[in-house]
Length: 225
Image (cartoon, rainbow, N blue to C red; front, top):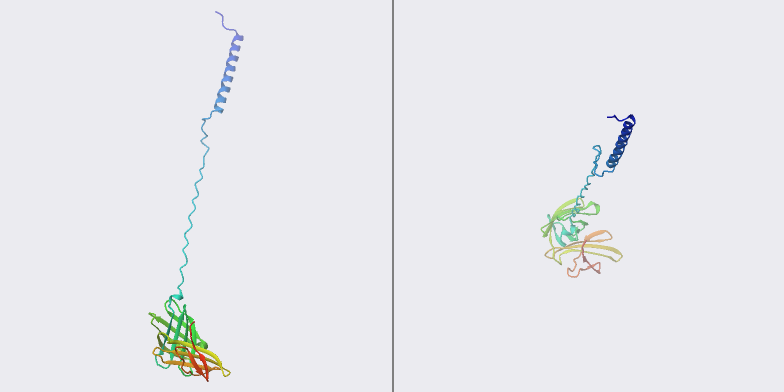
């Protein structure tokens, strides 16, 4: 039996080599187009964490400031502890006006605010002051510093015609400025200035406020802040 010749052996090797090339090319194409090929272990996937914004703190409404109008309106009249002078205070809308007089030649008009707790610090001319406290809406207890002297006083709740009155006018060429305190019980204390000179005031008619000064009739009216 004859052995295959060299030419036949070479041809068989070439055919086998061609077969291997075709096989490798086909395998590479499949691997490249394989949709299920997993990603390389070196590839990392980052996830963005959701951002949480803090809810704004609820703002609290400002605390309301105490209202001066919490103090009820009213009129008060009374005497100093030494019974030498009278004091009247009129309260309206958290404001106060007061009058101090001795019925002869000393007087002072004062005004200021009334706090929600009923305290007041009123001021007048020449450094005059009145400090008082409304107690149970029935009376005002305090001190008045007038003309360099200090007087303690108590003014009770006044019911008309009791209260504070004032009249301004020009009589016989003189400027008239008069103040009156009608005390509970009807007694009156007042001072009239004629061009700045004080003297005892004549009585007014508590029902109408009419008063005659130097022969001329004028009208005194209730005083409120």
